[in-house]
Image 1 (tube, one colour):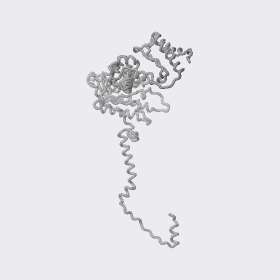
Image 2 (image 1 turned 90 degrees about the vertical axis):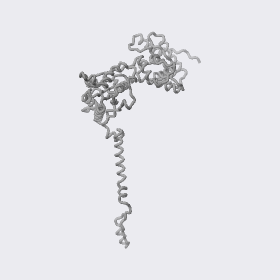
Image 3 (image 1 turned 180 degrees about the vertical axis):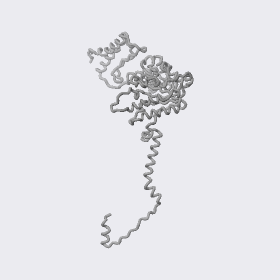
Length: 416
């Protein structure tokens, strides 16, 4: 409003009258309309933070539950029980863990003479050999809760979160003792400690120090045993491997032929097999395969049989699935006549020398159909597992590889 308007109106003898505005509404309603939106926004954020804190996720969970352990608990009473019957092909590692099961079932058998069970057991083996499954089977056989957590889940951007989660994990285990704690991929936080460039301990080292402290702080009489898995035991900190911590090491080796057959029997329990399916022959054709690899072969064979509208899985399905995994899927690319002829000569060189040279692995299949990243494949597989390589075998391998290089030269004249 113009401040000179009133004087202007008076100069022109304009009559001015003012009446106060009367509010006919409810004062309580007026108050709600003015303050209500702010109260609703505050209430919504309070509810959101509480919900996120309960679930351990979202913004609220990141702020209010950041120090909580994210370990997944498997209880034999409510979850599917995994036992040693579900583990096959690694009998040597399984036998070394029987004592752990007996201690959790009847600790007084060992403590009455002053003995104590090992606090920590380190499972060492290649990826896919069944370390996690073996740890679950120990908990299932003993009938105790099983806390599973990957070592990478301890470390966050905020300093101190890893150590807080370690404390919370061991606290939960003590509340449900006897129990088993399983830390997968221990090498991600258990690497040997060294000098820090900036100074002070890094988040990874703080988490490792907290694990060492927690393992020193509980007695094996409490019924808590820590299992851990790694495929790089040489990079672990020496403090983790000293007596009183992970002082027992169990090596989980690749299964042999008999073990692979036992693993295939476990994974084909619920797979209808045709009469020609021979698991012993399939086990002999898969040297170096882990339990996870064999499970993948069975799954791919079942999917392939379903695509072929079969009611049973045949031996051909297993071999086709095996070739798909080892050699790669077929690639429908268009090749010229010259390319196909050169590929045929190349693979023929591999195959002929593989058949003629003493000590070479038997030739199983030769194809010029592109698979994976190869334009053609000569697939040779051993009859049995090899743990030593004699000179004749190595020479045969070299000759076979060079045969593919030498076969196309010189190429014969092409017929027009």
